[in-house]
Image (tube, rainbow, N blue to C red; front, side, top):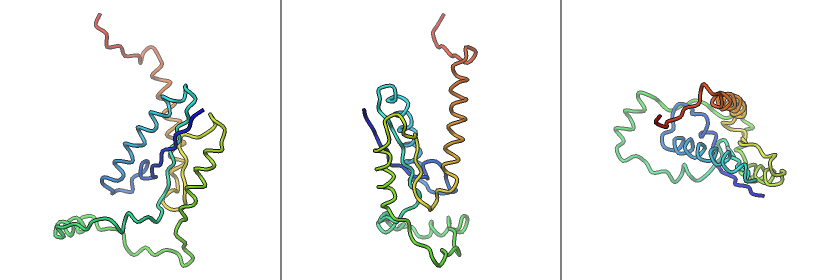
Amino acid sequence: MGLIIWISSTLGRVLPGRGGLYPATKWAAEGFAESLHYQLNPFGVDVVIVEPGSFPTPAISKSMPAQEQHIVSEYAAVAPPPNGVQPAPDYRPPDPQEIADAILQLVELPAGQRPLRQVVGPVFTEGVADYNRIYEQVRAKLEASLRRPDQAITWNRR
């Protein structure tokens, strides 16, 4: 019937300890897309969140340098960026075609059989699918508990 594919990021699920606005907006977008997933499902519309890991994009080269370099230095002194990590000699950057291929696979899946989330890529994805699976188990348990009469909250005046 219908399919909405929402492109997010693994940073929409797991923070590496820093990130600022980018992961914050991805977390918000994931919440909205997940809400749509549950709201539209009864109408035959699948909503899938595609979570790419790190892929080479022009975003880094287009970022603006901070004007106040002394502030950047103060932050770096407290929380220095990771350094000294070198890629393996046979390292190849991920190919963005992987994302297109994952989207095609989702489109070709029968309606109603698509996952809520699909992790894509080899960089910054390890463990994210496990995190998503455990999250779904905990979410289902919470949802079931909210259906119990002792958990029902009514705000009507009596």
